[in-house]
Image (cartoon, rainbow, N blue to C red; front, side, top):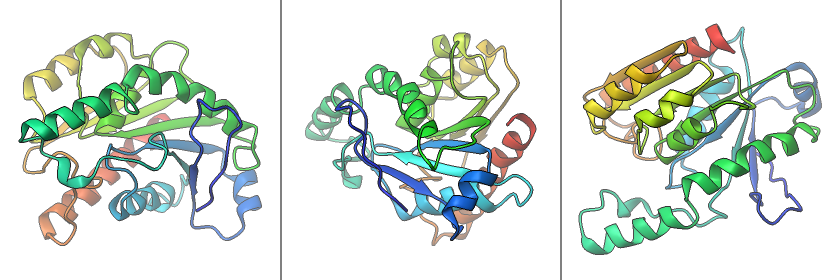
Length: 241
């Protein structure tokens, strides 16, 4: 894992570039598909890193370089803030979503970040970009999959703020894996509006965040569905990226 700074104040100051290869220069020269992985509001957790490893290596014939920008500048939301079951939690989460996690503001940064990455040694030779968003990151994926997107395919897992109006403008193949906590009607309405190749599935016995920070991988069923979720995303990307 390496950190990379950017001179522009508006861009994330830290970028987690993940791969398991020891020869970083060879990797940059030979892997022509990249993923931007936007984790949830709780920041970087072991479950997320393990997911990035699965994305990078689980499909031996289609391996990827995975980048994880730190949009929260090292100050994510504490995990115990969810669920927002008190007035204080609701207030703090509202302030966070209106500030560091404002979706429209973050979405504007993503294309700039992709351009910056393509100018680095790690981004050299890129032919296609994919994106994967978790929870809050799913909303960012929806907003950055519209006309003019730098991405060729996208995925959202246990997405937050699902909006059918976002779906109307999506122009690239999209995979959405919802948990049992997502609003079923909102997910269906989103699906109904999509005009692109897609895979929409609900993992009904899983909680919001099971493929990220809230995934309790000590439980056999969660681990099974965690792995199946990443396998599903990879199969989708094999077809479309």
